[in-house]
Length: 446
Image (cartoon, rainbow, N blue to C red):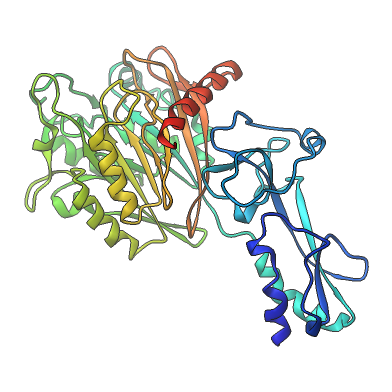
């Protein structure tokens, strides 16, 4: 079966786009691998071709007809700065695939595909080799992830929930959230009806029914590592954890002790193992409250503090259990679009230790995305369900993961309505939000 290795070596793993007139097998194999459906060949498979553009490129969608009329070339070797055609299996950040007729390359019905055939003087050999070569073009398993920023279901949203309107916080976005394999966010409040308010400027407590609301909206994992998780003390924290678990939502980043607060949530989807960790690292509040006073200890309930060295140790341990590690980081300076130095240090420590994706919140506004060589940092997703004075612009982060990490990410722009419930953005709003994210991203990737 030496011919298998000779022909397989020529599968286009190292090519940016198939070149039908140059891809040939060694003479001794007496077989040729060619692009297209050859008349006298054996079809190996069809792979999607992505209309690849840099993440900050303004294109958000194209029709298949318009895409063909562009007459774009195959992608060159990186860095890629202009639109081009790239086999989907080779696409990685900071590139993104432009949807064609509303479809992404891995979705059924996607129009841009390249066929590969095995031809030669030995048809029987080609028939024998074909099943062995087809896995080279088989799509890798994917996990789709939806992530949002701060969820605060007190104030007006909490009042509506107590009236029994369980779907009101997410009714306009639930379909988008539920479409993902895994949906995550940051619960920016205590949860329940017990405990006493602590002495600090702002204290939030969502009613117990909020746990059901979050589950119905599709949330699978929620970070409690933030500056409001213990607003009503340890008793309320423990009640909130119980309410979430009862709805099959996994809380991370806080718990009965240090080990529980730092324990990863492990999920396996389509054979891909994903671990989630969560941390808080926020400045001392203006009136002197220090969130780090809530840090969990060996025998003390609390939250996971985002010390870079501890993050690195936790990530290294999680990597031994998972293919992909995702860190949720509650950090930054409120209403400041530029990431804070401590926020950047914590995120970088996570990436250096093997995290492929860092998802941030706390600043109450959107922040940019940084593309590191081994991981992606989305510094701030802003508010999502939150009645607060501040910009209403927000977004749902959509990420596709495979065993190697982040395959692609994009944003679904959204808008926070009066009273705090989010909805999907109108086309005009979406264009402005998308441009805002792009502008914030450019300085982070010189």
